[in-house]
Image: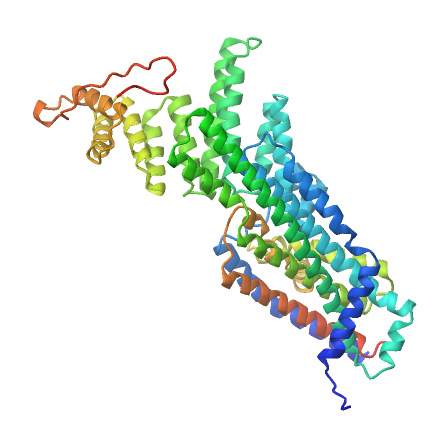
Amino acid sequence: MKYHSFSPARIWTLAAATVTQLVRMKIMAFLVVFCVIVVAAGFAFPVMNPEQQLKLLKDVSFGALQIFSVVIAIVSTALLLPRDLEDRTLYTILSKPVPRYEYLLGKLIGVLLLIGAGLVLMDIAFSAVLWLRQSLVLAQSIAALKQEGVATPEALAQLNEFVGKQGLTWNIHLGVLAIFLKASVIAALSLMISCFASSTLFTVVISLLVTIIGHGQGLIREYFFSEGMNQIMKKLGSALLAIITPDLGVFDVLDNVINGELVSAFSAGVMVGTAAMYVTGYLLVSHLLFVEKEL
Amino acid sequence: MKRQIQALTVFLLLGAIKLPIEEAATHHLRGAKLLTKPISVSLRESLGQASFAASLGGLRSLVASITYLRAYREWENINWAKVDSLFQITTRLQPTYFNYWDEASWHMAFNAASSYLYNQDINPMLRGKLYEEHVQRGIDILKEGLLFLPDEPRLWNSLAEIYARRVHDPKKAAECYLEVFRISHNDRYSRFAGYQFAQASDRESWVKGYELLKRAYDKEQRPPSVIDELKNLEDRLNTPPQQRIPDARPKMEINHGEVGPTQ
């Protein structure tokens, strides 16, 4: 059989093994916790207005989705290399004709597959609860309008519009895509850090710090580009932070998606392109760090 | 060592290349109303470290919902100052969600203002002053919200209601209803503007009110209130008999159990 220096089949095998490895770590138990949170949020606070009830359900669910994806992206990626070293699996793999970049790529794809699958499952659960809640809220509001004798076609249309905007739309799933893209960037970043880190804890802490700073990039950039600033050190510091951390704020479209703003195909493309740039860049750096690393 | 230097070089190059790309992506997404401006550092003290970090970490909407729920709780405890400050944080966190502005203003201009006005424990002079201050606070909140959402008809409608029902300034109320009409193209709000202009005390407003209500009348929108107000305005404007509408003045009493005048 002819040897290829780049083999998608080998990468897929590594990715599948990584998914199995992570599933065995019981990472997906978070799904159960998520479902409990969504159902609780879905039926809590019945005294609020219909629009607000749906918004709260979306806020809580998207918050849980974000926390799940960020935590899994950081922790699972940080665990992979040390675990493979500890189990000696890494030596078994690399003693075969598997290039190191394929190993890294396989590991990252495995983590992304796990996060993607988890997000899809949680999205399905969340959509079902949202649809159920939306139908209940609409039925209750129509009944209340009829009871008050003000169920005019105008009022009903307005109610449908309000509830529809806060209810289940295709746009919601694009919000989940934004969460996945952010998690991809964080996973690639953690992989890069784990290539030179001395311990798992170091990788987790640094990745978490970079993630927090990355969310405040907008503030940092505004500070960096502000005209009134004349302290060179401060300006250099903010420039350095802006250069070394990714701008994760680019993927924070959720606030406005929750409010009913539509994500166009072009905007989704902008987010995908930005995420691809980070993942490619971080993978390249990871490869350079890992290719000659003494194991 | 050579590889590590190469890695550092690529990392720094990536950092330099990504800056303008991030700026362009942010600019596009803000233009598409998908991203809001970063929250002000001054909010940190009001929010607390944990909430500030959470809102920076992409959980801004969730933190806003939590502060909203806290404000709701303070409303139940009738702590108006706290309601106001918590809504202030909520609206700062999510300035493009109209409902927060609307509800914050409703609490101040209606709930808090009435609560102070009817509080027998407070000196009557002070009660009136507190009432006015809170109504004004409600107006200020809506005006601030309209800076972020200038084309939100529900905010204009709420402002109109405060001017009409709390400040009793029909001209300003009419102007706000006209804004709602401009945005929503719903004729109902043009009629509301007409009713408000009719309540004003100057002739110029009556003329405007008559024009708006006559336009509704010509479009066959002729509820008793339109006909009655047109009749009143014709009297006040001394309209010649041949230019007056032919309808008789409707019976405007409301019988027990009815929601409006009979036609």
